[in-house]
Length: 545
Ligand code: N01
Image 1: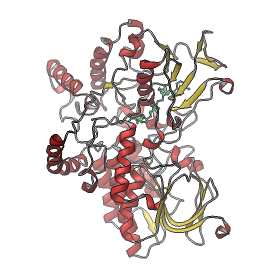
Image 2 (image 1 turned 30 degrees about the vertical axis):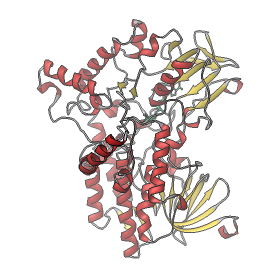
Image 3 (image 1 turned 90 degrees about the vertical axis):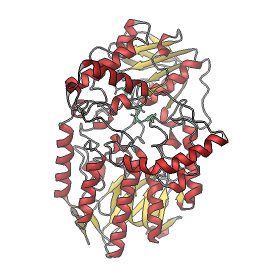
Image 4 (image 1 turned 90 degrees about the horizontal axis):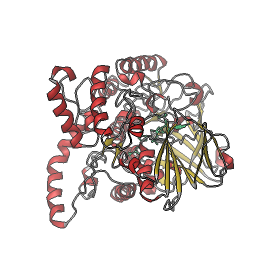
C-alpha cells in the first residue's frame, strides 16, 4: 500500500522540474484551486541554470527575450548583461520565486525514479529515489531539454587519477583551473564556453574536437544599471516589452526577430554581402536566424552563409592548419542545422601558446590513462583536469530516464526505442493523464525556452480547466492522432536541411538512439495554431472520459 510509505502525498497535479516550464505551470495551475506540487531533483530552482555551473556558463539568447513575459516579474528585474551568466540566472530565478511565491509548493532534492499508471483508480503512482510515494491524477513532466548528461565510455576512464566532471555536474563549490593542465572533450556550446575560461588560466589547455562547430560572435554588452538610466530603462520596458513579447509569438523561434522574406539569390552578391556583414556585426544569433528565408531549406543558400562565416573566422586564427580544422572548406553540417554556439574569443584562444587543438577525426581518442588521454597516434596528453563537454541525451532523455510505465505496462523508453510518438509534442498514447512541456515533437530545440514554457504551460492549464469543469478525469492521446502528428513533424523536417544534419536535434549525438526529428521545425506560430485548433474542437485527438 502506498500509504505505508514513510512519506505519502495525494495530489491532483504533480509537476516534475523547477525550471522555466515547471515554475510557469505551477503558477498558471494554482488558480484552479487544485492540489499542485513540483518535485525537483536539484537543491534549488532554475533547472538548466541550477545544474550548469561550469566556468563561463552563459545564456546565448538576448536577456530581454530570455525571461518570463509576466510584467509582475520583469518590472522589477534588471539584467546587467545582454547575455547573462549562470549566477545572474540564479538570481533571476530567486526574483521569480519571491514575486510569485513558488517555493512553498516545491519539494527540492527529490528526484523521481519511477511512475506507474494505476488503471483502477485512474491515477499515477510516482516513486522518488529517496522512497517518497505520491499519488496524482495528472502528471506533467517539465524536466528540461538538455538534462541527462551524456558521458562517452572511453576505455580506462576508471583509472584516471586526476579530476574529471561533465559540464552539467560541475562541483557546486567550483574548481580552480589556474595553472592546471586541462582537457576539454567536445566543442558544443558548453565546450566553447568552458574552453574560453580555461584558456585564460590553465597552464595547458587541450581541446579535443570531433566535429567543427561554426560559432558566432556573441558581442556581449553591459547594461548600465545606474539609478538615472534604470528609471529610463523602466519606462522603456513598460512601453516596449508588451509589444516585444507579442511579437515573439509570431516568429518561428519565439524570439523578437526572424528571417527576411527575400530568398538568398533574389539579391545581388553585393547586397547579400552587405546584409551578411550587418548581421555579423549585430552578433548573437543574427547571421543564423535573421538572414534570408531559404537559408535552412536550400543547400546553395546555406553554403553562401557558411562561406561568409568561414572567411570571417579564418582571419581570426593565425595557424592556417588549425584554422582549416576549426572552419573547414566543406562544412560537416549545414550551417545552423546543428545548434550554433556563441563565442567571445573562442577562435583567438588558438593563437595562444598554452592552447592545442586535437582533431579527433584524424586522431581519435584511444584510451584514458592514470595521467591523461592517449590518442591513436600513441601520444599521451598529460592532464590534471578532464572536462567532459560531451552533451546530453537531449529532449527525450529527461523523460526516458524515468521508469514510466503506462496502461499496457510498457515504458516510455520501450515505446520510443525505435521512433518517437507524441500528439502535439505534449502527450503520448498509452500514458493517460501524462503530459510534457518542452518535450519531443514540439518546437523545443528551436524555440526560445521561456516562450515555449509559457505557450505550452497556458495550453496545459486550459486543458486542466476544461477537465475540471467537465468532470473529466481521464485524458489520453489517440494513437491515430499521434501517427498523424508524427507524419507532420517528419514531413516538415524533411523539407529542411535539419533532415541531413547530425546533432542532438535528431538524436544523432547518442550512440544507438534512433535518428529521428525531435523538434517540430514548422515554427512556433504554426505549432500553436495546431494546438489551438485541437483545443477549440474540444481537444480533438484526445480520448476524454
Ligand atoms: O553539447 P553538444 P553541449 N568523443 O551536444 C562532442 C544548450 N546549451 O553541452 O559534434 C569526442 O552541443 C560532440 O562532438 P560531435 C545548447 O542548446 C546552451 O555543448 O557529436 N567528442 C560535441 O562537440 C546546446 O546546443 C548554453 O562530433 C564527443 C560535444 O561533445 C546544448 O545545450 C550553454 C564525443 C557535445 O556538444 C548542448 O550543448 C550550454 C565523443 N565520444 C549548453 N561525444 C547556452 O545557453 C560527444 N562529443 C550558452
